[in-house]
Length: 486
Image (cartoon, rainbow, N blue to C red; front, side):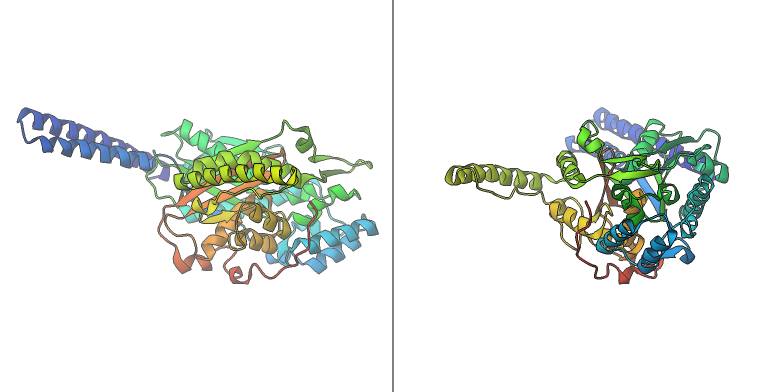
């Protein structure tokens, strides 16, 4: 029996059993009434119905069956000394550009085990369309092969496919490339997301969630693929504001299998607790700070302007209150509200005493009350530490982001899944633990997802699997504490 048919049959059986339980409860209630039994017996059918409805509500929602993330071949590894020598030998960069990129790479804290696609190992690098298509296949196919093998769900059972890749939109589309390779059914719903940067992974989860909910019973599984085609983002000009992508971004890919837990009783690893998206694209200052455009010589590159840090602070000020309201427990909300009122009183008193020159630090919500583990934007080790400090988190909470950037570099939206893999490889995610994934990207936009572990603890076995299996204990290594360009 095919996986899809089996799942539909199990879902139908669950629905029939649910109806049968409700009918039996109603019949029992009527029998108690007809035979005039003790009044306490009325509570038994009522309790049974309420328990059934509660369990049904617990099953409803979106679940993460499992995820997979790519470890590129070792031959694609690029060390820091090798990269700096490569930049000097290419010939398209002047001494000032090479010095700038060298300083950024060294200050970022990136390690010697990141990966470039094959085309960028050439002298000079090749950034043709064919190279980008080849890189897409190199990323997608091994990752999806692993995902389908881990979950036991065949490609024919996938009803929705979401691919996010910011800078590359070929024809046929990236989803068409995947659907063709895996011979997916003709009614699979496909979505290509572009131009969203590091926030796109959670946006893809949101799109998949909407499809699964809208087509509950008809679509049981959705796959979300997150990758960045580094080939197409390579910049060979001399504009310093466009050279940062050459320094930070590296090869990586992740794929997640989501299910509708209403129609699919199959076990899931995580339950989606909350998801929130925020954009401040209406602000021209933020909108124009990260743009793909041509330089004065007609060479296309991705511009990252100065002041991006201030824009992201404004973005978080808009995003965190909304998301925090949905995930923080009531006792933390009350504590934070009281601290905020005391802060405003102290600030008013300080201004009166010091003539407006006083400064009182604002209180921060305790996000550790909402999540046990964190996956943060991989934008350089100094920036990760600053973000963690702004969220009120310590070095341990930022460890997954620091280790992922140091080991794999910035892999855009897929970095969040590498960080979740790091937590699992360390054996830290236990049943009932909650994991917060936070992504920020161009637009500007921020997206957050909160997952709760519902599967049994993996234990030490998880540390031997996946890209982290042979190196998780070596990261994060001690790194330079210089300030990255922001």
